[in-house]
Image (tube, rainbow, N blue to C red; front, side, top):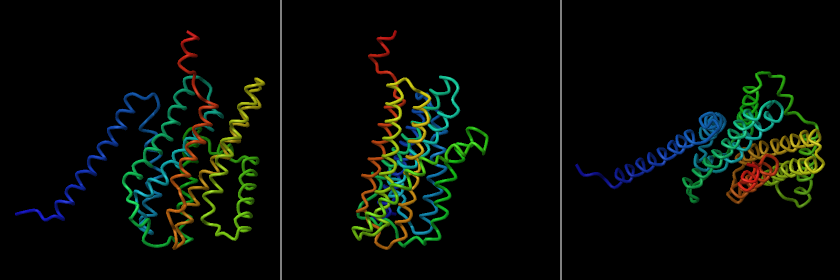
Length: 297
C-alpha cells in the first residue's frame, strides 16, 4: 500500500527529530569524555529546572516548547552557574576543587546556551507562542521552580540548609530594589505598560551586578586587597543572580497577557546576559593565557 503524503511527511519529521536528539546526546558523550567538569551533573541539574518549568507552561497554556527552550535555556544556565560560583567562593579550600568546580560551573552556562540554540533552530517564527493566557495564580509554581532548584543545588553542595543565608545579601537586594523602583517609575512616567518593561529592568539589574563584581575584583587586585575583593565579587554575583531569576519570572508574567509578542526581543536580552556573564567570568576567574603559561614554565 502506497504511503500518503501526510504519512511520508510525518515519517521525515520523526527521522529528523531523532537525528537531532542523537546529535545532542553525542555532544554530551563527547564533552563527558574530553572535558574536566562533571558534564552529566550539569545536564541533569539544568534539566531539573528547565523541564518541569516547560512542562507546566505547556500543560497550562500550550507554550511552544522550542520557544521555551530558546528563551529559558541561557538565563537558567547562567543562574545555576552563578550558584556554583557563589558556593566556590564561600567553601572552596583547594586548587583541585576550584578547577573542577569552575569547569562544572561553565558547563551549566554552556549547556544552557546550547539548549537555547536548539530552541532557536527548532522554533518557527510564524508559529504561535502559546494558545491561551496563563492565569496569574498559576505563576506561583514557576516561581517556586525558579527559586527552589538553584537553592537545592547550593544545599546539595554544602549539606547545610543554614548556608542558604549566603544568598541573602542586603546590598544586593538594595541594588535590585533601587533599579526596580527606578525602572517602574520611568516606565509609568512614559505612560508605558509595566509588564513588557520588566525584562528590560531585570536585565539591567543583572548587567549591573556583573559590572559591580568586575569593579570589585579590579580594585582589589590592583591594591592586592583580596579580603575586600572577595565580598564585592559575591555581592555582584548575587545581584546578577537576583536579576537573572527575576528576568525568567518576568517572562512567565508576560505570558498572562493576551498580547504577548516576540517584540519583547528576549533573544537579544539573552545575548546581553551572556555577554555580561562571560565578561565577568573571564575578568575575575579567567585562566592564564598561552603566552603566560609558556613564560612561567
